[in-house]
Image 1: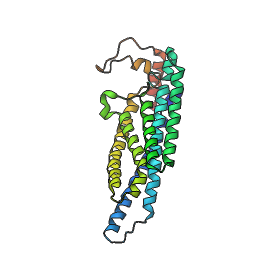
Image 2 (image 1 turned 120 degrees about the vertical axis):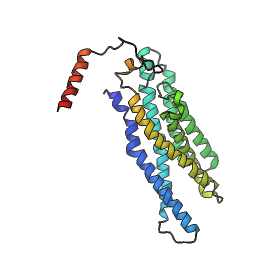
Image 3 (image 1 turned 60 degrees about the vertical axis):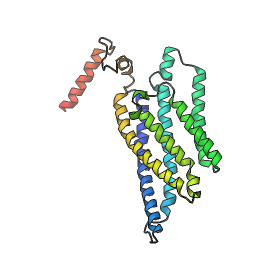
Image 4 (image 1 turned 30 degrees about the horizontal axis):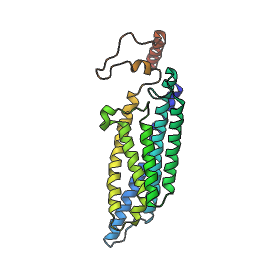
Length: 259
């Protein structure tokens, strides 16, 4: 594995080490908060401490930031190192400086919009910064190098991740409305959408594992991308891999098996 291959592991490592544990904690606090509300509504005294509500809010805000942040990390790697990304464009002599500056500014503006969304209190500004954050993610996701798998959008790690990110942004934007709405309409919307988001996160775990198998290493890309993915065939005689190196790799692998 080369340096760029190790960098590609940052996104899944962050997702496994931080995002998914936060999801579990958030779901646990959400369930306790609802149970306490139902018990108090019936006139009984709940044994669940009242602090679970504020803890759920705090963890939920962390979750939204972590989901969007991990998404940005994945997009940044894809734009630079992905197929026909900046590295490939530089090799082909097609890399445009204006495009690079524009994408860098888009990353900065998306992060700033997310930060301001956390600070905003009025409905108008929350809607503006939530829209800007979502638009930033979509524009960045449309760049070359991003592994979208558009022909299988319903089973695409990219599209599922984008949908989950949008739901997190929306949930963050309506927090103030949830606590002000006496009819609990926004609370029900929040509950339903986050149940959908939970299913999307499960799908992310499955599709992310699949993509780790499908996306080739850097030294494999020139050979893999010559294949016909629709017919599942590859041209003969196209490999430029040194046969002696391949034999040495196989020999080392056989030694490991014998050990």
